[in-house]
Image (cartoon, rainbow, N blue to C red):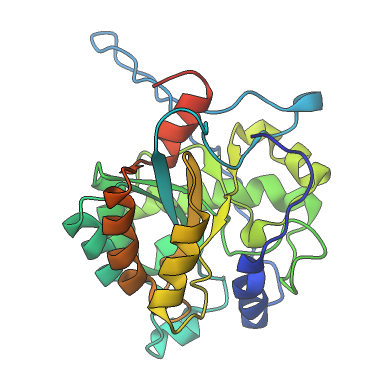
Length: 285
């Protein structure tokens, strides 16, 4: 479903907490967003990942969930958040990654989409590269440092309108520097906050904005059972579930995943990446 109105959810309690981590925009280094790579004459050109057509007035399209009547599929997505100013906290021992969660997804053979900030990729380049090279996963863009794209987003510092595009491009540049060569043309707004102005600024990047229809409630949760129940109660065919891949901010996510995955499989659900849901929405299997 495509919508051009801003949609805020309970998830953004995490965004409010991240607001305390920094208030100044990091310098931007404009770089082109990823495009289909040129192929050598002797090789077929690789197919471009599915995206949605631009919305009304050519604005960046917004994707919230896949087709409801196209089988029992569900996409688990994980936001790997880190702001530009959290380096000292990471140096002091705070963990913004979650290797155990990634290992569990691999163990359970669950495809997933990781929406990563460029700053996270800079802090954990080996993990970013490992996730990006695993065909079970795909990496998408969650901005460079989780600054908001609207001026009223749960207290997050804001990226100026003039720097929105370069902020997205800077994240893709950070992915490439970490060794991630096939980041997807999908973007998740920090805090889930956007408006028409933000959608207009990102049009030139060619991304599809990806929201969600199921909030896991894992941000700062301490009860894995409650997180699992919230996910299981919300999932419908084609759902996009938003969770987190930041150990310090979402400490029980891995435990919740261990409950959610077998139960949804028992109910007949098949786990897919966001790209498959977008492809289905485009009539592409």
